[in-house]
Length: 180
Image 1 (cartoon, rainbow, N blue to C red):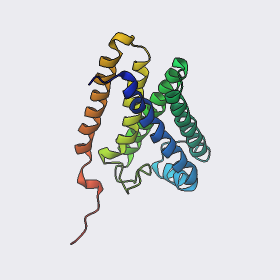
Image 2 (tube, rainbow, N blue to C red):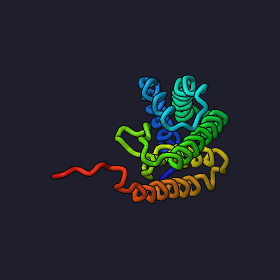
Image 3 (cartoon, rainbow, N blue to C red):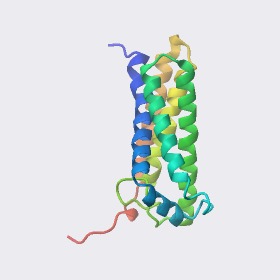
Image 4 (cartoon, one colour):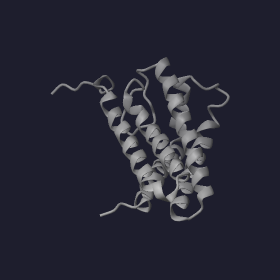
């Protein structure tokens, strides 16, 4: 059974698109909490804190919808544009989280559904997935048809391997102890 690149496209474009749609929708529904979290992290100038959550949520939703559209359509330019923008947004998240983590590792992340502290390696997982899978999707748009299958499979395997390596980095220090 041969695995075609078209079979892998839903993963390369779909996973980052869904992550961005979920993040954008969650951020849009929790603007007040996100503003409070950004204020606690104390990385952004206070004048930007009121506008960043709304702008970020809308950007995530637009990129997520663009990723779905790119998946369903045939436009290479759209796939490249959405993938490149997703890489940039994901990288910005990684850099922001690294800075916030350096300042206060005990602070809550605010970006995961669980009460995860910035000191946990788990905080990098969603943004890392967006970056790595979007890079794979972007790379796929530049390879020739003859090597597309090999390149796509290799990039996906690499992305999954790196994400799996990040899981052990989530140490138990961010999880509160419970007496049984």
